[in-house]
Length: 225
Image (cartoon, rainbow, N blue to C red; front, side, top):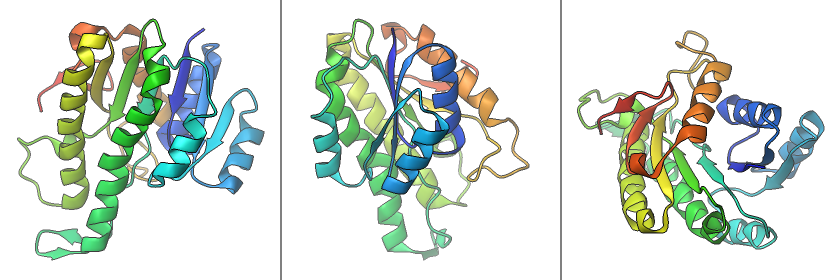
């Protein structure tokens, strides 16, 4: 049975990833950041194991990881934020900018590092970092620059992690989940959370080591950095 760990599983894409993974018969572990959210998600999806940590709390992540003793086949670093309201290059909330990087860049790397011993135990280990096309360097748009910069940084971290883990047979990619109808994407977005999650999981199921270190769209289309 495939075991999948999804961060930010309490809402949006993360919640739908959890639902669809359960429907596949997978062993699902989902993280949320509060005890209240943990209780609510456990009631909504009793088939999954719900764990509780703030992705910026490194000690809490380590404590939770040390309590697990089974291989993790797929890690999806989904938890993330859009960043502060004030985030243009000419008017920046710098504390909010730093917090965006802490959640969108540092946390996925820390989680990958902490759970790496369990990922190494898998026969087919895969790490998927949920990024965004908004972080692609070919785009010169400057709106939401803290978010854009954080996703560009996550892409680079993903490349580096893929390089370091490829000799161990661990596939690591970044994915653009699409413009999704969620709290972050808004109601006028292109696709539903169900469509995005289905695409992400399809890529996760078929991912090969040859694809490690790449950026892939939710529908399986390769993207440039």
